[in-house]
Length: 385
Image 1 (cartoon, one colour):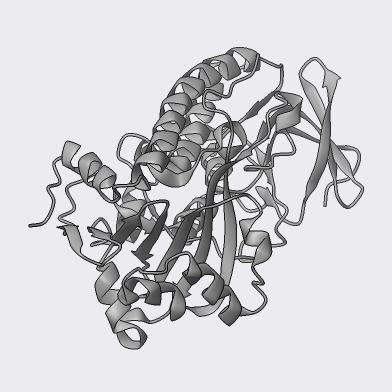
Image 2: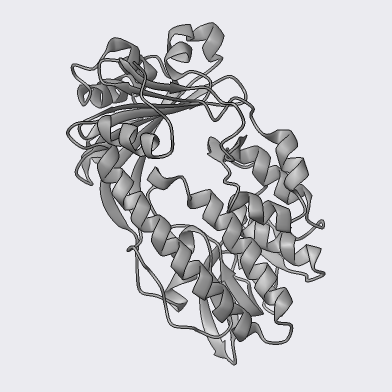
């Protein structure tokens, strides 16, 4: 564990995909960094479901990291299949995965493990929860840890997600509730234990949509189904549900889907294990800050957005890679590197955040699923029937 006298030339807070991509690309260029993460180990918690990694963003980052070929060996072939249903379970669009869309699916945990395994031993300091940071002048910062120790750094990077401890050094902005809440569920060994639900979801991603409601689900590499029941609701809606009583929680969630086809309601009714609530928050579209010496942000810490553009993980990866490349291109001039990185990051993040906010409205509008069908048609995917 670090002590009060420790100094790290480059310190990254957060061992998510963006922070690890930054550390890896810096390593490729012979630049050492230290990553601090609050989890006690790499295996302390599950890493979420499937990610589609885009050719022009996430995959670009993996190329810069020298990991693209290894990534391709780990993708879930068939995972780009898509199905769109209405609330009556009528199939409105069904597309198989022919590996031609440039967005292969990979389990988030597998991708994180790939990045972790590419770093020198000791790069990540586990069990290091950051509680605060302060400027010392000349771009240097001191960072406090929960165990009472602290360290100093010449470059501090906040890669610590939605509720970043580093963001206040740059911006007073805080995430706000978007009006959408998710309840997550899992159906294990779906083909054997839940064959009807497996057929509804198909081999990749399911969108079953109605006005202000929907089931979003995908098939994972272990044969399970991961389901998000999405509900437009007040911020306190989830507070009224006892998630310690799984059956009561299922009933409360399914009350929001009265009149929906039973094959869709079964995605929650038949779920294995507890349900998990999640409010969807976002930073303001176009969030940015004035240049501050010696500190920057990436990923959700910089531009948290709703998941409806599928860009969060991709932008985090690209942020990390581009920040590393900027630092490598400006040796000895950190401020120039940060200015170059932030200019590009701000512009692309604003576009993606605006798209995500727009899609959140389109997906769940009163004529759903027509909005998503129109979106897919614009990309050459035609409705069924």
